Image (cartoon, rainbow, N blue to C red):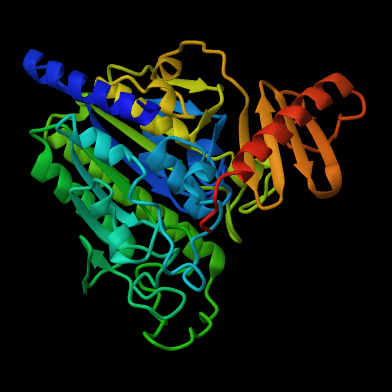
Amino acid sequence: MSCGQLVGVAVLIAGFVGSLWGVEKPNIVFIMADDLGYGDLGCFGSEHLKTPHVDALAKGGVKCSDFHSNGAVCSPTRAALMTGRYQQRSGITGVVTAANHRETGLALKERTLAELLKRYDYRTGLFGKWHLGYPAKYNPVHHGFDEYTGFVSGNVDYHRKIDQEGFADWWHQDQPAIEEGYVTDLISDKGVAFIRKNFEKPFCLILTHGAPHYPLQGRETPGFRVVGKSQPRQKAVDRKRIHAEMIEVMDEGIGKLVATLDELKIRRNTLVIFCSDNGPAGDGSSGGLRGRKGQIYEGGHRVPAIFNWPGTLEPSVNGQIMMTMDLFPTFLAMAGGEPGEAFDGLDILPLLKGGIQKREPVFWGIKSQTAVREGSWKLILSPKNKVELFNLDQDLAEKKDVSDSEPEVTNRLRNLAESWRAEMEKIPKKS
């Protein structure tokens, strides 16, 4: 019997026992921003962005200073979220582009977090960006989600809901839909409606915002994309102001979600999580870190993350290494399951509660580069065998390569990076 089959059996047994004993299962609200950098929130050091609702979650919860997206671009991180494994294992190694990957998607044989949580009687909803397959057969409702409304491409016109290749891209379940409204507001409103509809049973709500990914559009910025035509260039806008508005509108919607949890008196039984899918693009801030979206340096994948669960998680700043792929096994453990060996990610709830757990090295594979992190050490292996080594405790900005002065560490981590890369290269790639 495979690891995946063993986990499935354990899930069924634990779910049955839990239902017999009447255990109250916690709700999960997971919110992911798109292209939000490490320095793009007030609680992470921004002096010009007003994010009071996310800041309040950070003040009353666990603010994670060493949380990382699995990828430095959109689709790989989302694949890791859905599977709890390195995205290379599911073949989503890069962006599932609207131009060249319209038949590609997360394989239906992949076991997703929604599918497993449903076995524990969770209601599952995803609203917003999918980016793991364009055809209807790859829609979230065919990966375990009871409800889905949103867009399946990398980005859409926030008013006209047209993707970058001129395709109308707004879906209700697995059917094309037409709906008026600003995308960020729609995503938040769908989340509120889902909570109101399902609050009497355990639920997992995932909101995947488009903000602040381009195009730069606020509530009053005109739509400009046209169906079936090559896309016109967006007219010049006040980039800094619109970028800030996009984040602040998202923050406003998060405030409405939390207020709904309070109103329905389920706040103390609900874990609320906020993070980003990768580092910042053009107008965002990496908060002093080296690198940005698409790069293997810290600015490409170290992202802001907050876990808020009143009465369960004490307010703190947590500096332990965590990854997007950790969320699936964490959610499963919250539901009463045993993650087992089928995951690359870990159940991080004990860490969020203040525990200490030794972690095996973690890896990133971004284009032709590989990085490995072991404690404070990070090694980057680039083409033509170029090696860089950084001690992040002493040099978080990755300014000083110490590979020559630390040959033992360099050789050990290089061997780890090469072995991991060789293992991942054996897996067929879909994008």
